[in-house]
Image 1 (cartoon, rainbow, N blue to C red):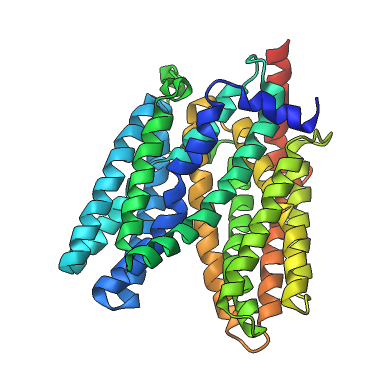
Image 2: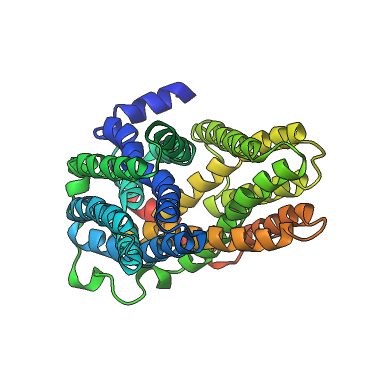
Length: 416
């Protein structure tokens, strides 16, 4: 099957024509709301410190409660969780607008936290949907990599379009409030739209012995090791978001070029992801993940020695081409390692740990960049985190390899 035909077959699967475009619409808030919220609170209070506290409240509440939403989706189905959070999140943003207009700081913080806590777990639900639609026996199992690669690559648009849309709303309206309204509206419409899909209505009923309790997927063999790799990849992403703009400024190109360079990085990732989705590597998923993490790590190390912004742009395009493939394998591993009764929660844990790693990477790289001659060392710090993750993923007798072998055995049994 040709590369283009694989994606055409995926596009024709029931629900795909909603999951791809409307799935992006539903998640535009991921790229819009954090920036718009920061600017809104700063504008209302006149203090970046207050804006930072509100932004942290939004992020921490979202990261803490996302796995809870995932567990509820596993137990009752994605649809009711998406509908509930899809409605509550815009309401919380509306309260935030009122609080900012009245400049009531405690209410600003509370509304920010509630908005973060109620952001719909659409990413987990969509990736669960693709996993279900390509499960063994569906007739589409061989299309899973292409489906997840397209989902991963298209998701890059959220981070490219989100900040651009916030800037556009500020230019047109003179303030960030309209961007908050737009983010809430797209979240509401997109989430309710994808919640109507039949695949989101699956209740995933499980027997009493299969109900998720306690630590849930965190106690599943191989999953904590996968999360350790996710954290390392998150460190690199967070570091990149700080290092690349700092590189542009230190080379006299200005902060605006930093945004362009990050966009180029995302473009390289998207192209690499679409290409990778049509490949059928012979090696196991943990070995693929280890190899791709190592390639991303090497690309970060090479970026430390780029002499000019043009050279850095070329390096970002080439290195970026390895990012979406690594994320595709990461999502494939989640579906392979985590039991069906815990899949939504497992995907939400991946998002939570990635956000935590990104925050840590951004903070650490910021400290390094501020030191004289620190810029190259910040790149190398990110490279070290990625290479450590690659070692965890590729360890021959490690937990991820054992979990993958067990999954392979279950697959052979299911196929007879």
